[in-house]
Image 1: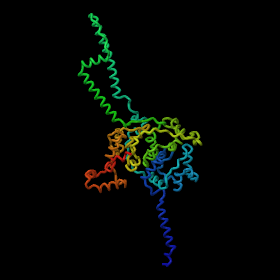
Image 2: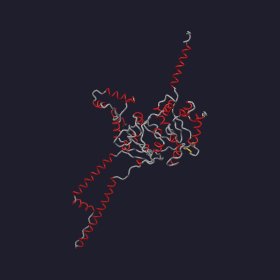
Image 3: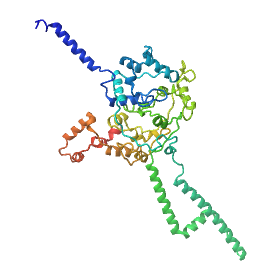
Image 4: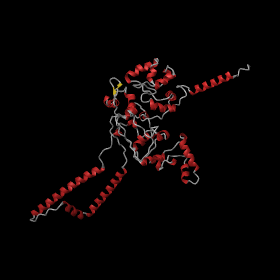
Length: 457
């Protein structure tokens, strides 16, 4: 072997090969190496409002089989997603066919704020979506009118009681007048003197003393009734089940969520990232409604309110220059007291709760509403992870009951696992903690979910 075969140039070549191999393995491309689980979250948040996987919708092609259809380079796919117009300028035939088919009617696809690694995850999900819990089709999956969402009747037992009491009082007064007139008529026919008129108050007092037992029973009933109604009214303070305010635009969840399969987090994108779920900006609405200009139920009327808010001319398909936008004043539905702290991301990202756990079957709602707890519990067959509760929705008892029943999977969060390990070190002499660990289950309560400062400022 030549004595110079392993000289400095050989080492340089080896280092270069290793570096290139590392780089190529680190950038495996968008068609392989992605995480389908992460891809599902990204797809739902960024793509699902327009794209489906195995079917084509009005405004966009289905993404199933995109790896076989895409004839351009991976770099161009990344550019197409991040900057569609720049990718179209490349002149690629397939991209050109997409532009000619969809852009004239529906406008350009919105540029997506995703990285190349995110795109690889999305492609991994599109090519091999993880299995999902199958929901049984009842034949009424997308109702045109949500019968559960019609609101409660204004009539109540109290109103009927007052009406009956007033009617009884009128009858009693009328009967008293008739009786008084008949007595005077009889006295006159017998040659006697007429009775002097007396006030209704004196008549009532005389009748009450004469029927003291009956009056006492009636009084006891009235006191008991007022006490029960008062207690029920006090228990209803802060309970808003069924609350459904009017909104400035007739937005129906059932059309978007059920019929068009828009994921909740596409519109409420911060639910898994921050304290608030967020209300979608008008720009988010325009991602679809720049092309969809006629609604299924109200035609152009309600969608026109979106255009008026943002300044969009549906005839020309262009935004109006120098237009002063008018924010849409949506009415908040789920209101918590100012002293209550609630973090959406902790429950969605760490707790793994479905939106339906707290909000009910949104796919059957018209406008937003607070779902009664019985209605949420009825979804257990469709959502096996749902926690059955008994207290009214959005009350303190409802939250405490959930924290008492909800089990924590320590393997999914290093934070909770660390808390649990610290608790186990204190088990000696702690009878309550021994009882907690005795059932091999860890609930939110056992990790401090009942501490006042967790939820109250």
